[in-house]
Length: 221
Image 1 (cartoon, rainbow, N blue to C red):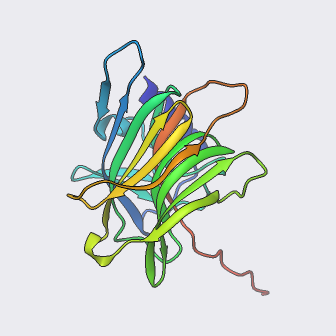
Image 2 (image 1 turned 135 degrees about the vertical axis):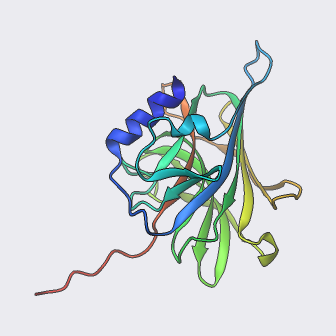
């Protein structure tokens, strides 16, 4: 039911995104929770995410495609799809094919409590480089794009495919990336967030895509 609740809410909120434009392609989402009183409970696969999926998401040959949306992660209607986990100990990971992203586009993996509290590890296509970055938003005073924690360039050897991972340990986060068949590399660790002060609600572990192109300039008739 946690999948259905997330998807239903997003389907009502999110506007249709252009389906003929660039898409972020995710080959899996794996989430493992580790409550202290229980053994780890794995939750794997994309099919459950597609039940009642919004029209900007589709499944093709086992790959989840997310059309680039105009809303940022700080917006009310971001193009993000995933599952809720209880705050505490958990790991989320994915494989992203970012070959179709255009200049300015962003896609990746996020742990999001709400629009003002999230941490992400994301690919940012800024010609002539492909960057991987960790960004944190920890309150309404933070930049809507998130405060940049760390970034580095993705070399051509990645061939537009990168694994992304978020590890949570009671509000402290470690964010990692790797080649498709390579070893994990830590991009940032001991990052505090996301958390809503005075609340202990769930966190959404989600896959997202954002259209980073400049909006068209208005012209006079």
